[in-house]
Length: 73
Image (cartoon, rainbow, N blue to C red):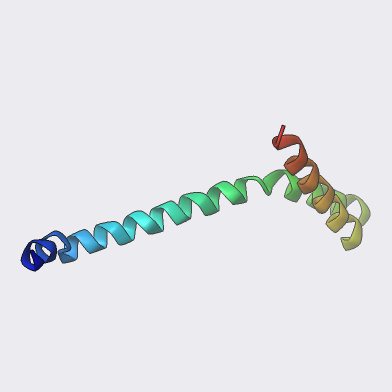
């Protein structure tokens, strides 16, 4: 029984499982980062128009919250 389990968990299989997990994490992180593009653009535009980091931060936070609220419906 132990020999058959050892043959299933070969080094190649462990590498495959590790790469699969890393790939899923990367995909989830990219998906999360894509949702921050619109608030980031709003913050950059606000900063260039006002040269005020407070307004840029407020614009980022407001757009991010609105995105979350409108996406749940």
